[in-house]
Image (cartoon, rainbow, N blue to C red; front, side, top):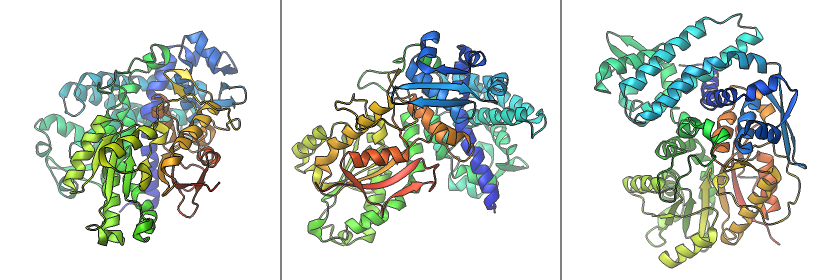
Length: 538
């Protein structure tokens, strides 16, 4: 059994892998367009001036530079009152720049693999990865003094490259059944999982070199280290799902910011949505139990004081709705009254792929629910559709959502800002850099639009947050914040610091119930919160 210290070290390695999936392609894109060179000849550089000089899209350039700041290679200086952001090089910047070639092979493999099916093990991309891992292993063994600044930066970069090389394969193995209980509990041969036993055996040996498996006479068995990562494969899923964007940072930062944009109804190009839903469902499951107390309290009230049901906006893969139904059915008074007072469940999502997955999962779980299209930024339309098609008022339902409000479509604020935002975030819309104060004001107006529809039972939210880059840099290996900032920043999503979000909620006329409020982790490094918001009395 792994000790607490061993688990801590493995978790740190996982977080560094996530850092690498976004940092490696960011560094290579910035280096190849001369951005890193600019910091060797200037003390402090303004983002907008640098964007003009390099013919870059300032919004995505700012996201990329903030990634480097979160890794400790730049220092961010932000003045939201004047909408100015600048960066300066730290002492380790030159060391990173000199060692940035260590990223090249991993980034090349990531780009090359786009030519192949994301769900099949095909030989050519695997062989490219095998060669890259061999080179990576050599680089790990060729380090200098482990305590030197140069060696520390080198090791940081090599862990990043390892994450970019192995992370997509870990996700692929998880999505295709490698981490099924059958394989995790017993010895197995490569041909039990894949017809190309030779190639798959080589793949298993790559992971065996990292302590995941032991091989005996051609059979493999998980080690405790392997089980640790296998049980957390979905933690890689969301970050890896954005590889379609990360492969094209040359275009996003220095070319057409709409390069990956598609027409309505077409399949998304910026993200692997099926993978994103899979990763989200697995990663979010850890937070579901935290909301049980709220659900139990609400559905133990007198029936006249209970919601008619639950609406999950951004239902993803339906796992949250399934969990909520199970809690209500088995742990509340309402569960004993479902024949007389049926629970009206609604799964809503903007993405058709997510809706298909939700329908399938709800059917398999034998949970009855309506699954419909909806836009979180347009509650008026959703309320109209619900009333017209099902004869139910949106405000009669408990509204819940997980990791969604930051993913609304950008809407320019219409009102004057209530204050200058203190946020350190990097926000963009179609490549343009957004004022942090505008982003805060837009969030306030977004929440206000929901007030008429959540005034009876409140708004139950699990939300994602950013962390100031200086704090992230001081805690490398202890937070996935860099990965969240990059994937969401490059795809026009707006995650704000916990304290900024809480202030905006209050400013918008909501009360946060501290009894139920949670943050994960419970420290200044929190990137996730659970909140029950109710409308304040006038």
